Image (cartoon, rainbow, N blue to C red; front, side):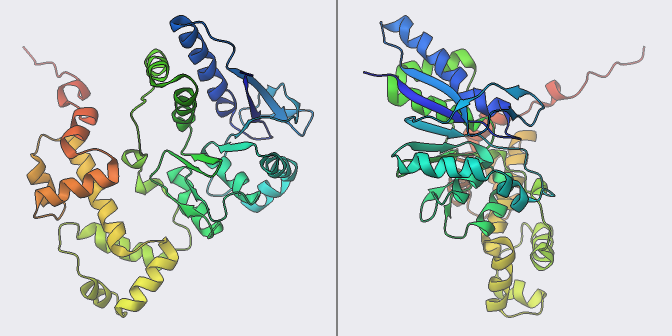
Length: 336
């Protein structure tokens, strides 16, 4: 069989690590596969661009080749900040967006890494499709591309030859998925272990920090969120919440949904799960006690909701993320 032609689209301001992450892991997987049985070269990787010269976000100048036909086109992310003029940035990347559109029209599978999803969406490839991106900018993405079915908790989403991934290290989640498809689970598992990459992740939910998500222009929903944050263990009741802000339940749902893209209950559940994660990581409280602390009388229901949000049951999560106090705190010397 001919090698799988993998092209990585380099462009001004892209993350260099996301340009080389997939090729490096594929090279490693090729060595692993060759050690288990003789194989032909499985991949033909190139870094391509419609420009003659590309400087990555870190200031490194990348060697690039001209745009060419490939089987898989990988679109890395770029340095997106809350204050970045996204319209101007995407307008300056018109040649790259046109290249993405052209490759897709030639039946090339397109893969975005992190906020590379913005470029793929600008090319019109995500309309009517399911997708994911960095949780930090998922809200911004959802408000800009209302015709995309965004799954912000997912690490990797594939919908009809278009794949999107979560942030940065999700590069390797996609690469391992590709290795699994090309060489089988044994090679993928061995590659993950050699590279110290987690091959069992299924969601980015455990890594979400709501305090880092940009909040510009959402004054009403921010006030509601603060109230919910301060009443975490109180039983949720929509009429009571609406009365607290002197609006009808219908207005509460409409205004909160318009500003935040979700319902107050969905937000409350996320905050409760965030608090529960913190307690599981930093305390030895029982799961039942933590469930009560975050507003759930039924520990079984709490465990089910926690698993839906994080991909793991509370005890599994604690086993993976618990930080023992005697390891985290410096040893105190006693005076003699």
